[in-house]
Length: 251
Image (cartoon, rainbow, N blue to C red; front, side):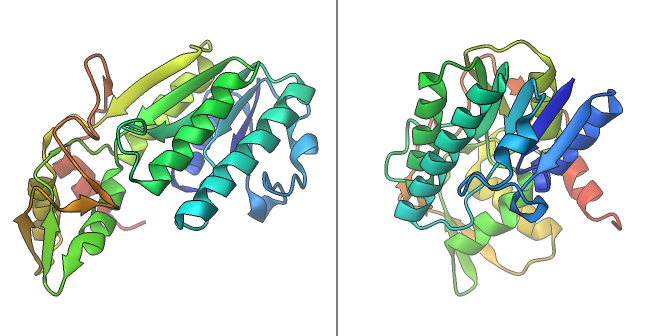
């Protein structure tokens, strides 16, 4: 089966491609770097010839609210239209747990707009809502840091390793369309400030972490339901300790 991964050269895309190729599928990993651009449409029709499944992992190059919304709306429209012409049978997209719960967050609003386009399209689909990747813990700390202190919400947090995300995306690509959403998360849930402090300590980062219920996560105050999944989520197998140990191995 031919599977096209849009954003296939990124963190999740490259890992997902390996998994699907190892199962014997023809995988085309595309991105602007490979000459396929979902914004301009360059190379899109050619890439989708013969494709049965498309996995959309494209990410906006900027985070400014208006620009990121324009990216996901334009990319989504172009990609879905090209898929309809090519006869694609299953569209899979990676989104975020809590997109509908944090309207103050411009990135979440943009992903929610992308999801609406997918649901309005005639193409059968599966949307995968993931919690934050463990690989983003440093970035979360950086965004919250003033001086030597990171002020973070004590709201519930359940980050997932990128390898577990790639496993879920590969399984979705080989499964039947759900015409619905599934949630994935890491195996451990704890307050955000505690998990980030654990990361900084393991990384020998001298910053301290303070819990603040009013601390904003990229523009939004959080509660214990904001960015964690509901019952029935698929949980990853990789613990924080195992992920951190693996992340320190030479590449």
